[in-house]
Image 1: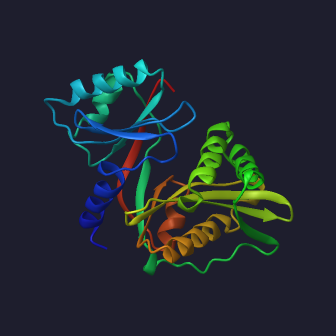
Image 2: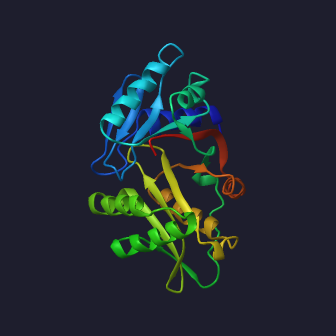
Length: 258
């Protein structure tokens, strides 16, 4: 993989050329940034910026004023290769809070190891209705210990408006949901995004995460996407590396008002 070329393509397709991630959201390009505005349960934030030292602080202040004027908490999705080099420090000085660093990982679908099956007694089921959304949200809340209301809202909205662009998968042990993950297929781009992979504590270490990656990769391949992209935690990075993903950069969510 040509890391520099694929990273440039990712920035162009998924950040600078971003599309709204759900119905009711919109993308705006203004003042050297690309931002998404959604309702309070959607994702609000800055996806990309083309700034330099002379204009960065002014742009940061403008985004704070804009989102707080809408009564929206928001995220500035900072990548390690963004300019200026001290943009993270400038965000912290302006009142943002940095979340743990994640690794931007990309895999070429044709080169990935996709033959991982779920453990015996576990089946993978794609989410197609409100009941399936409920199963995925149940896993999310148990695995991450966070409120699943925003995820429920986003999945139901995507299923209603454009079910072909969002794929959520639940692993069921009998009738019990034990792992879940989702994928976003963005038309007109080369990248399918893998998001939200989580497994309840009692089922970790049994290959469910790998099986869910493999399932989504096969779906992405069937839709013609050459690349998969993941913002990987330190726990998932080594699993993804073994499957054939490569690290291209890091990303650090910077939160304001959250």
